[in-house]
Image 1 (spheres, rainbow, N blue to C red):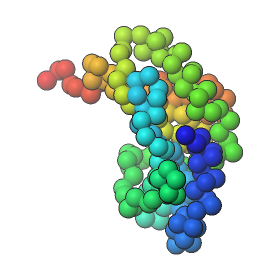
Image 2: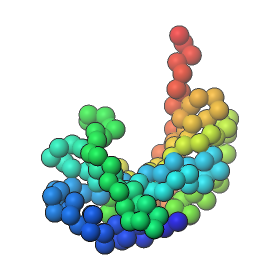
Image 3: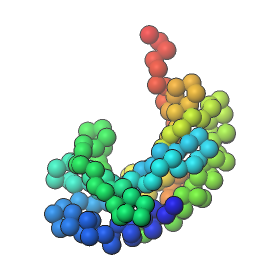
Length: 169
């Protein structure tokens, strides 16, 4: 499977992308997304997201192995109203997915000692002007665990556990 850097280079050579780009010049690369198993294995191909700041919509490109790429229809962005979608500049991504995953798997037992990880997803994106590998997993106890690793420095930027079920009700 191609790395996000390689995948982006491949996409940018595609006539489908070139045609789309001509009509969406204000759009910018916002993220890469992929479902991931509890063991860190990618469960599908990477999705590449481009954000249109005028429409507030996102366009997703997916590689079709051996057949180029396809475009998903524009869709709303999953974010809070106060959040801003930032441009992902791949030149700032110095830490590979393999290295970020290794770090996550080493840190998860100490960062989330009571949690048993289920499947989740990985996003590489820019938050607060920092490129981040953003790992999110659903635990067996129905919680989200999230660890953000700086894609430039390999430092942990944030970690959190979010209850999915309100036990107070």
